[in-house]
Amino acid sequence: MIKSSIEKLADIIGFEIGTSDDVTQAKLINGLCKGLNNSILQKSDLELQLCYIADKLDEKTEKILVGLVEFIKLKNEK
Image (spheres, one colour):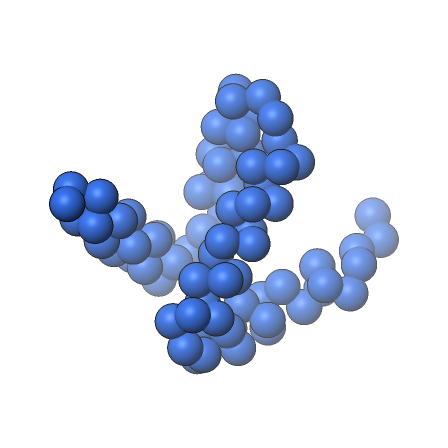
């Protein structure tokens, strides 16, 4: 499979944005989630894709995402 230049640079772009500010980091996460939502219309297909993604995450990423989910839950309790 031929990968586009953005796919080849995904890790580097993610790292660079990871060292950026909160607004830019939120834009990256929002864009990723919008892309997943818009490209995968069936709930079961989205759940399967999330399962595939989760399987490929490293320990540091899992820790950050679990922490982010906890803050989202706290924010939404208001």
